[in-house]
Length: 360
Image 1 (cartoon, rainbow, N blue to C red):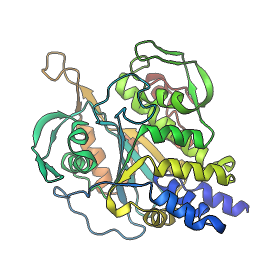
Image 2 (cartoon, rainbow, N blue to C red):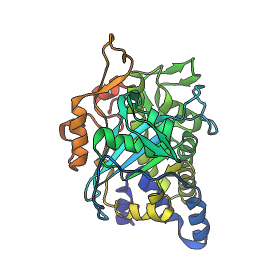
Image 3 (tube, helix red, strand yellow):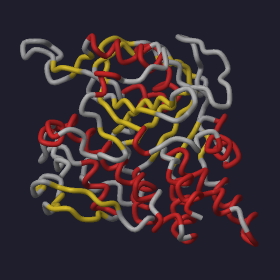
Image 4 (spheres, rainbow, N blue to C red):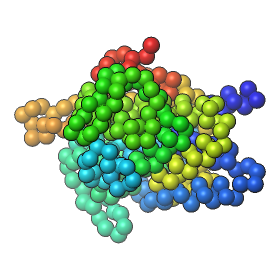
């Protein structure tokens, strides 16, 4: 039993979790019900039209890249927690690189206010023209995940194998399904503009409080960049919670989590089924929580006298980061201070700058 538990704990990625949970569900008399219930909840999006870069078909244990997007739409139940309207853009963008051998991975967050040249994209029989100096999340707002993936390939040179879009209504349900997620808030969050109030301290967040925490940016340090770091930390903490014995040994929690996750995601057709996710999970069993890290693409503010002041520009170091992904290399010095599954706050400097508690 101990050996099986250690093997389970080595599975680390959110996209893997749903597959692992489905495997656990597919036992006993509820096999057909569980499989169909979860499978039919997965929303199928459009395919990625790869034009900028090419990649040879990957082996079952080869490296791959997944684009993870969190939509800022407020249409889902309870998603208007911050009272803002939302434009259907990507509130969160993480390019997840899983290394050859599938034992290690790192996620790269890309700030939504970064200006890039958006490539032409065709979706639903219409053409969205290319445009220069556009905000990063505009591609998703105009053309959905396939256009966002095409933009990633055009800007970074990285081949995007698959994508997953998560809506924040399902995010709340996932948090509640595992009995809340523990966070450490160094100072009270008192945002009267958006009616978000969270007390300082280490505690579990549930439901709308968890959603408020990951969306808050006006009353916490470092605005959007700080919010991205807190999102990374929250994901890392949720991974720990999902893979804990308290969740893995509770079939009711497993089922609720798998159902909530499947009901909140949209994927490209190639992985939009329980079967495909199970196959993906089986290739990632040797991954470890210590080996998944989160960093942010290097950016800087435009000068105050620039017409683009208030937005961000990618730094030359970003090109080095993209090349790491293309070459399937570890982060090296570019991962200094990274958030990880075992250290959700990252370095002390990272924690202080972004509204996180420094690791003890």
